[in-house]
Amino acid sequence: MNSLLALGMPGGWEWIIIILVVLIFFGAKKIPELARGLGRGIREFKDATKEIKKDIDESSRIEDDKK
Image (cartoon, rainbow, N blue to C red; front, side):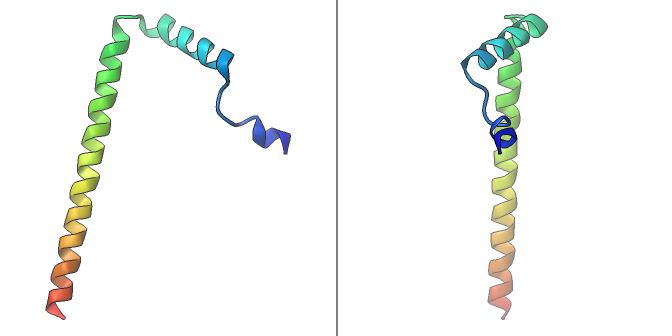
C-alpha cells in the first residue's frame, strides 16, 4: 500500500529539484519559448477535439433525421 502512495504528486523539494534541472538543461531564455509551444499544442488539440465532437454530433443528427 505504501508503494502506491509513493507514486503520488511530487512534494515541495521535488518541485524545486525539477525546476532546477529544467533551468540547467534548457536555460532561462528557452523556457518561455517551450511554454508558448506547449500552449499552442494544447490549444490545437482542444480545437481538434471540439471539431471532431461537432462532426460526430452532426452525423448523429443526420442519422436521426433519416429514421
